[in-house]
Image (cartoon, rainbow over all chains, first blue to last red; front, side, top):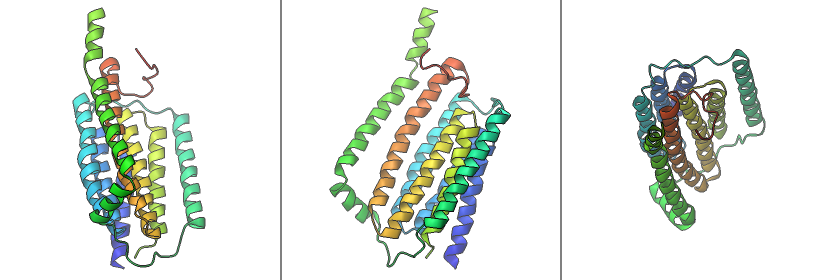
Length: 171
Length: 100
């Protein structure tokens, strides 16, 4: 019973703050409410018996990725920029198609989703995750490290001032 | 113990909110945040099924999805910084050329 109270409270928090992200015109408010939504999802991971992933969610998502977003928003000084209104036809099509998509998703989940409870406790602490990762998933793990290196190089190349300096030379 | 389908329905709602944001917003950074929202909804599904079937593979997939979301956020935000330097806006309607 207590678990249900926690689940529905944090589910409501996650959904409400996700709605704030898509309705608020100020990107700083959007980024901060996304952080709250991610914290609520970390609580969901604890309820799903995955405390290691909950810690990872808070550290990596709420800590690292959202700080990157906030840095970029503040670096570009976007708070004062007016976002142009979406055209009414596009807005109508976007809302109706996403609502239809969501209703279809929930309908099929309710119809075909698994309803029986899992039996027995599920051990998924850092030790189990680590053993599995460095035995079965060592090759994807190394691939991810190379991908992150490529992302660092790409980000430096794209955001550097080299292109701007070249433009100033030619003009 | 909470049944798995509650988590799946929450994940579906969050994913739909993300889709709605991507389709209706014009601010590039907000669109990016909606993509992060969709990625998180999928992560929740992975974890829910991992508990349902007692498979730890689902948790490892969440780990990889997080790493790739970090890489994608870094590169995407760098692209928006570059776009802002050239166009002084991050309205995605303005970004209609591959090079300038």
